[in-house]
Image 1 (cartoon, helix red, strand yellow):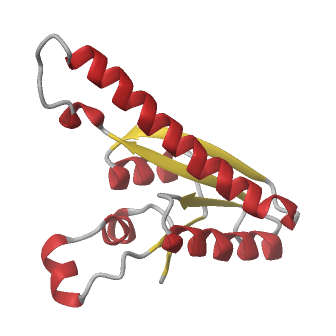
Image 2 (image 1 turned 45 degrees about the horizontal axis):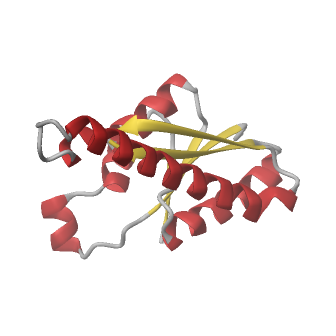
Image 3 (image 1 turned 90 degrees about the vertical axis):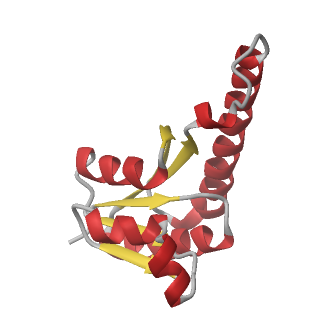
Length: 145
């Protein structure tokens, strides 16, 4: 049933709980797991378009890339002895858009993602990455609290 599982990771305890669920599912189905991190679109983080913007941009981009790689590698190490094939991938962009695009392009059978756990009203007004993914993903989505 499940052969390819996408697990978006942001370094939070909820995303690691999602990874745990995905690993257990993958072990039961003989599926592969892809740990996926979306580094934020950093253009909006560079506040001054002046002379120092290129330096700030490059430093910020390198920092986000390093943090993302650390998140992915820590998760891979955490679950490497479970007998499940795990790969990792990092992209740049808006998290919900990139996760949905990856699910479509990679023909995933399942997305397992941590929930932010917003209250009902706040979640309704603000939305969340996990809610957008659940509404627009091309495959089933398991939200882990």
